[in-house]
Image (cartoon, rainbow, N blue to C red):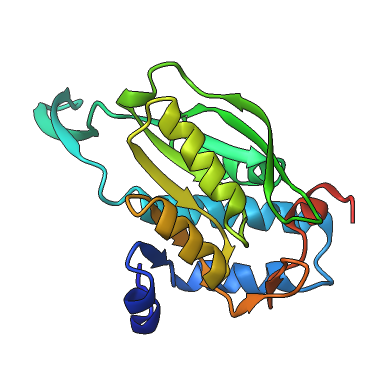
Amino acid sequence: MTTPPDAAERFPSLVVIRHPLVQHKLTILRDRRTQTKIFKELVDEIAMLMAYEATADLPLDNLAVDTPLEQTMGKQVSGKKLTLVPILRAGLGMVEGILRLVPSARVGHIGLYRDHDTLEPVDYYFKVPSDAAERDFFVLDPMLATGGSAVSAVASLKRAGATRIRFLCLVAAPEGVRRLSAAHPDVTIYCASLDRELNAQGYILPGLGDAGDRLFGTR
């Protein structure tokens, strides 16, 4: 897990995951010729690989276990509970891959959409476990573009009592990283690529198009 030096200097809360498998799969994901089925599978696989990196610092407790031959001391993830919170609808594409890695994780949902005129988020749904203060939250959205939805989602989680929040996306624009970091400097942002910029319509360049449309075949 490495972050390019220039990105680290500009965005201290950003982690760019440069693993070769992540970068390889991301290149195929960007290709306009990649069909819905393959696109969906790639989002799933990249999310799992990213979650492997994003959970690398979870605390461990000692646990005694009986092997077929003797008792030994092993490790288990500490008592903190992990909850995945996809931002609907595109964030749903990242859930199953992470659940295969951490099957005990709970899943909440945050419903937001971006107004195409103002580019600002509009809330329509929020549901997470009631013991938010005791949980680690991974907010999931393939794209961190303007940052409006991410800022709103994290704010909603904090109002519910959450204090340990990470944001996972596939590609991010500098504008979105800057906005989320300014609003919530305590939230670490994980991405597979920090792209160049946003265009006038708020799409990431070079990006990968509309992730929701490509995931669900509605383009």
